[in-house]
Image 1 (cartoon, rainbow, N blue to C red):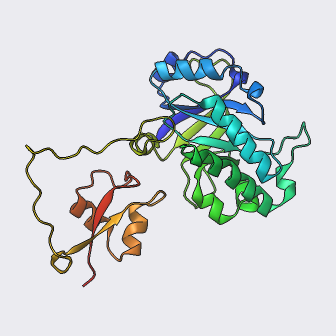
Image 2: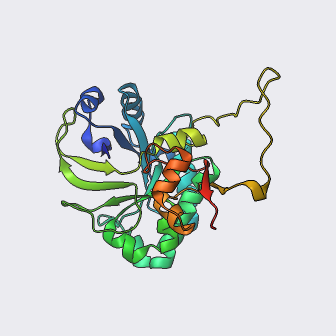
Length: 284
């Protein structure tokens, strides 16, 4: 588990070096809101630069006022303009909430429309090379977002208390809005990440990180041994997909986590990466 906080202009000046020394691993920073680049959070650039300099893993979120998928896609393009030319180790999150001080009540538009708004925003950013997710409170997630969308994007769930009442897969739990952390004046949101997204994002070349090139073999390198024929192999090869867990893979192929761990020399069964190839024993 990684410890984190999320911040915006409301925290004012932050001493990120002290935040890092206090044991915080990551920070998710508000980039802005709405459809105009003029709505960029006034502390975004400063917060990003200082958090990175302190050695913290950094993600971002965009508070949306979209009521239709078209509006959400436009907001995504604005968000992309604001966060351009930066590297983010955690996802870029779409912040879906009702806003009581405005006419923005997306939950009142129904489950189908809310789900389509999320898809429009996230897919637009995905096209631009970003690893994206949804920030939402646990209760409206279960009542206003389809299972398809909930499982499609990284989830950052808010529910304040001693535990999260959610049985589905998620990446981050926002457990408090009244936390205290050295380096931040006043209250700050406290987060716990059960997934460290940084290796996935960096290896995949998302969020401003360059695509990693596979080195081509040179003449000096030994030639690989001929691959065995299919009927000689005692295993099949499977490419890990985003969202997979070793538990799900083992169950799907009728094997055990222990078998997969030993066959693939996996050190940490909770840490597998999309795009990697693993061996799975053939059924006899």
